[in-house]
Length: 250
Image (tube, rainbow, N blue to C red; front, top):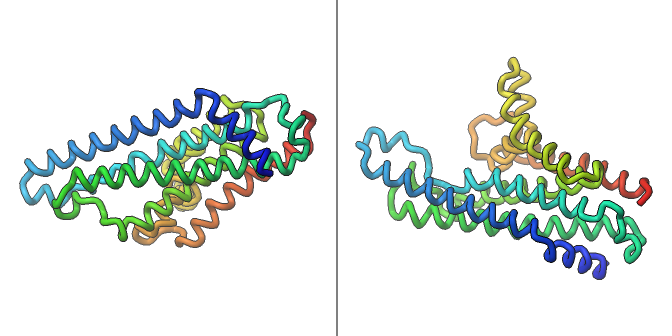
């Protein structure tokens, strides 16, 4: 297992695509910080009545969806970077190869997600300074449920990207499907008639994050049910990828 994991890590860090994804995340954090700064500047020049209606200058709300997508793309790259499965010559045990890929993606997703959330939340706090709510982001203890839910969602999207990549064996197709799941369908489901719009939207990853964090009033799903739904996304997609890997020819 250790050798398989080392081989997967070597492949990941010796290609350029992961560094491009990290750059995209870094630029998004900078963009989120810029939005926070602009919000604070607008807040300072607004009358008190308007200040009370401001949203929080929390850049992590902007950063999280981009990190989800980038980590899912990373999972797709780990799955499809070896289309001929030449790795089986050194790791003939397919279950061990799957475990190594899954461990690599999961570890990278958690590290990247936690770092991105910490940077975006910390930067937002520095920009807001001692300004009061609603413009001020939550303090760290209060922000932990949201940050934990966001990191969990990033872990889930990474493993979903890996599972889909193993199933379809195409980086481009996997990234398109992930984009539809993360951004396309959540944009369309609110247009459905009630109660379909609420019920279907509730199981989409972008909405599950808020339900896991417990930060919205009267959510369709409780935190435990929402977390279970996120795990179900992984079980379905990674399960499909595992079945395909274990049964198909190299």
